[in-house]
Image 1 (cartoon, rainbow, N blue to C red):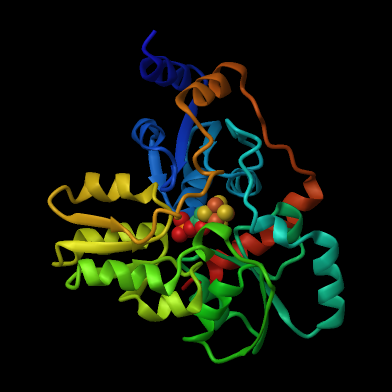
Image 2 (cartoon, helix red, strand yellow):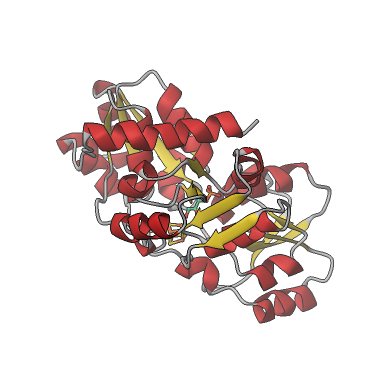
Length: 300
Ligand code: 13P
Ligand code: SF4
């Protein structure tokens, strides 16, 4: 059988949309109805007309889709595709921290569990974090869980911050020396990194952007060579969208094993068996949804 044709046929029968994050394997990005960054995928999941969402990404992303569209069935082909950063903050630890800092507003990166979102004042993604923090009605911010994204926001918004001590192990592996080496090889290249990178790496970049922010920048900028400081899966989309330009991965260590788990076979099986479905309690959906809706309101 031609697995790609079977996937397409099954998706139609199931009234399913296939969403894929920019870091997914090339063959998953190619078969998806829509590929994007966290904010775009959440919005697409919320607004699409299909009753089933097949989410090729990591667990927190599928949960976010469920929170925003509780009446839709949300399926993740690999339930084991987690995010170590999301696991660096637990509900109990956040409850304790909130007790210690009651006058701080909790702004939580979407790379977090539904339970943690439910305890937050607002969520944010890498593409709207600065606006959310700027517009939230407090000068005291507890930023959860990514200390690097929090630090990035603090460059632009002068507020009193407490950063949770979480990070993305994949982006954390990128070092200043890696960028210096690539810069020596490609002195005229523009350096684009994700704000999940260490502050000293962000210092060396021409821009720090979300994954779709990077793809947009590369489409529109006149340069012909770019050093890319984010997960390697994005190179597929970059090359597809700008075939005449050159993209250099800043380090071969930039691979997120969780983002690489989902295969075409997994996607086919997910559609065939409608597994694994995301289930969340009504209370968690209600509270987490408030924080996500606040994000959309504050991103203006
Ligand atoms: P983007 O929102 O920039 O796609 O980043 C999400 C992310 O970190 C996935 O790991
Ligand atoms: Fe989590 Fe980092 Fe992988 Fe994104 S790249 S899913 S933040 S571990």
